[in-house]
Image 1 (cartoon, helix red, strand yellow):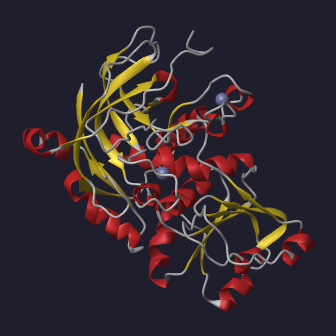
Image 2: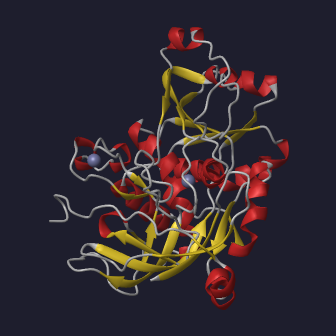
Image 3: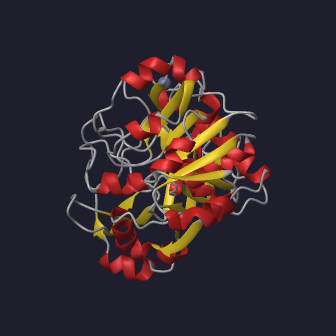
Length: 377
Ligand SMILES: [Zn+2]
Ligand SMILES: [Zn+2]
């Protein structure tokens, strides 16, 4: 099928309208019309090649929501008309220890997991295109069921921002009676506050912006600590069992270490490049770990979306038009994204089809990967 979208040819170029073909769903796959797509900070990193792994053309979007339009042979979990979501992965080997354990995000197969866009990075000439597109095709194992009654506009941010902070909470055993610290209250951080509360924890939010305090308390945080205020940081010393650090850029992590209890863990989910000197002394003396965590498996992604529906947790969102994507990315780049997630109303793209027919740049068709594996057969 002919698919319109927005993508870019190079790190220093704006996104422009593009057109390409997605093949009809094969056995085990489903096709859907994209209705909403969240804008993740990773989209900006990938578009600008900040992680030095972008394959162009780059068509971003991994917080994808839509309505099923066709299903391939053997599809059992979905039918035409269902509302579904796709997060950061569209495939994996489904045949390794990690995939068997439901953590496809750490797939040990030869290609690892296939990212929803810009993947698989390791293989040349094999590029996937994400959700900044009119239509999408995915194998059913990687589609998430949207619970009845949960507003589809809110789904996208849960599938990346939500799962990224939820998975470490589960892995490191966050529960009632424990205290979670959330560093950075943006797209990921605000979800961490809400999900931490849903798991029964006490939540302390750390932010540089004093002006955000009231809003953060409204999100449910029990306490707000202004990280630039030495007195406040001092009074929060050794109070946290788990810290989720969502800051997406290199920064000084040392001041946060002092907030951690003995035997606690700081989990990095936003910054993939480097840290300024980490002083190991305080880590050693208090057996504090610094760990990383990458999104989450499909089972856990379904779990967090179900939890959001059950507890009426919604990300703070701002609806935008597909055509305004370059402005949105500039806003993210300037760090002015506030405490909400941009979500593209893809109706803006669907309505522009006539115009796009004449103006969109044709780009190569995306990589489809294999569907043959143990679970599908
Ligand atoms: Zn993301
Ligand atoms: Zn695997």
